[in-house]
Structures are given as structure tokens and as C-alpha cells.
Length: 299
Image (cartoon, rainbow, N blue to C red; front, side):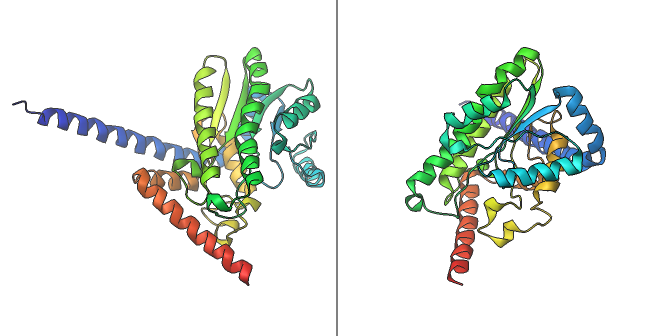
């Protein structure tokens, strides 16, 4: 009879070491995210030197290239007045798929895009069962959340690699951490973004590019309008401006981050339970958000 006790002890020790290293690394990332804004001015100037002076940001109005020209113009005036930078507007509807991406490429022309932020995204109007979601809305979520990030990376990544520098930020979501009942398709698209981005990191690791996977938790934007609890600013639900300040400071520092110190803490504790428990908790939270939304409709 073979005594497997030493093998079991060895495997247990290796597993414990793995979790300790992961805990330590996550704590370092949280500390880095918390302190980064103190040095934000230096970070911003270094980004221009490192990647160039032009950044292309999709989803730059209601979330963190928009369909609404008036909102784009308002955002343009606000940013230009605050930061004295030059902005070129592109009005595009990414639910049109390749047509939208071709329009963006045409409008960008020969501008040397050094940073691409794939931030555009589409969410359910409120937590719903799959059978309740209109088919057109499901297709829009897939085309915007999966199609746009894929084709936009395809459009600009080789040009960046040719010059040996550039940064791509693909914005995912904390919903990628587990299957998410009542937001099934949305969470699945964000899992795609995570997998896609990590594969790109490997493909272009030797070509001088920064490819970042950014996975925030709740941010107080219009996407979360269905619940006052996550639509209002709080310690763990920052407004877009505050979140962006932290997230910008992570570019070129961490390739995998939540972008915000409090979200790093949330992600750390979210990942501790097994997936089945995380799925149950996520579904339970969404059922509460759904009930809150339904009650608001009745009122």
C-alpha cells in the first residue's frame, strides 16, 4: 500500500503558497492604486512621452465615440476647457458593427493613435431573464461589447506594433468574475473581453505594446440607472471622473487591474468563494436590483 500523505501535503502546501502569493500581489495592486493619484500629473505627462499625443476613446459620453453628437460636443467643450487639449469628434453607432469601425478608421485618417481605449459598451436596461430580453437588444449587446472591441483592436494594433509603441485598454467589468444570472449575456460578453485581452497580451508581448485588461466594479454612470444603490456616488461606487483619474494612473503600470482602489478590494473578496457561490450571490443581488426597478415603475 502506497502512502499518499506526503503527496497530499505537498499539493496542499503548493496551493496555500499560490493563494498567499495571489493575496500579496492583490494587496500590492490595491496599495499602488490608492497612492497613484498623488503622482497623477507625472503619470499623465509620461503617457504622452511613452505613447504619443493622440488617444482614441470609444463610449466617451454616457459611460466612462458616441451615437449622440450633441453629447459628444458637450463632452468636447468640457474637456477642452479643463485640460487645454485638442479633440476630434467621431459620431459612430457600434451596434452597426463593421460599418461603424470603418467610419472610425476613415475619420481618424492618418492621425497617429498612440492609445486606444475600448470603453464603449451596452448593458441590459435592468436585470432580466434571457427570455425577456428583446432579440434586437441581445444582438446589440453582442455587437457592441464583443464586435467593437475585437474590430477596433484589429484596426489599430498592427500600426502600433509597426512603430514599436502604443497602448490598448479594453474595458471589461466585474461581471466577468462569474456567470451572472439576470445579466447572462452581458456578463458573458465581458468574459470574452477578458480572455481576448489576455491572449493579445501574449501575442504582442515582444512588440513594445501595452495591452491592459481593465475590469471595474460599479461606477455611477447611466448604465446603472435601474438601482439608486449603484447609481449614486459612494465609497465603492465612484463617479466617472474620480474613477478615470485612478484608472489612467494604472496605464503602463498594471496590465490587469480594476483601475480603482476600492474596486480592487471588492474584487479580491469576490474571488475568494467558489464560482457556484459567486454565481448565487450575483444572481441574488440582481434579483434585488430587479425588484427595486419594478417597484420604482409601479410608483
